[in-house]
Length: 332
Image (cartoon, rainbow, N blue to C red; front, top):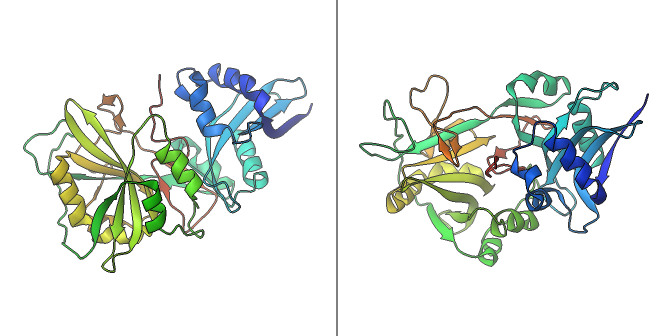
């Protein structure tokens, strides 16, 4: 008995969707709505898709794994997404398909920001790094809250600096002001930024530039508002550029909160030093925090879950909320 792991072709889409719908993804919008699936996984040439499949010599699919590219040019990275392996007579495992993608896609490294806690050791046995994402928040000073359940207020003091936080209103202005470094992992080129945040059909994103004392934009926060019962919060979905300079814009983030009456700001991330986040005014949620910060915002539910990641890199990489197929409504 033999099986083959290979990259899928465009004509494999119906088989892949049928496989995923019948195996744990029946109510996931990526497999329910073809336009959602195509946005993330179909390449510009219309012939290939960013998916690998495991096929037995009986012609059946036993596994599939998608991946999202961070750039169209050489030196891209990938995030694996929407994977599943069913019980099979060949001993095929999900890690085997992901390893095939890592070794054959041409990517420098691969990561995912939504693995299960139970699989962490599996990824470590493959030689990868795996662990828990950090969930930071900064609450506004209010007498009552809609999103949050605050038992004790913990609002970090922030210092005013010469750094500014200014909204960037056009893609042309964004490209003119920020230099994207290829050395960053993942490397997100302008094709990715435009497609993921400017042309994204289902959410509206905004860009805020971190302007240093010399008037240069050293980093950009990609954010979006989420509303519930007439109250808004701000999610930081991505950070482009030199994220170390976030340490100097805590006062500006507070100004942004005050001007827009946000109940809080949140930031799911990994790879940014905790001291930077603390100086930026953020508090880390953990099992010892009595304050309840929901992670289920669309639609809003009082549910908190931890998110776990893997990375084929061991150092000098970041993972953010919108990486891969995330920062979207998952269920139909």
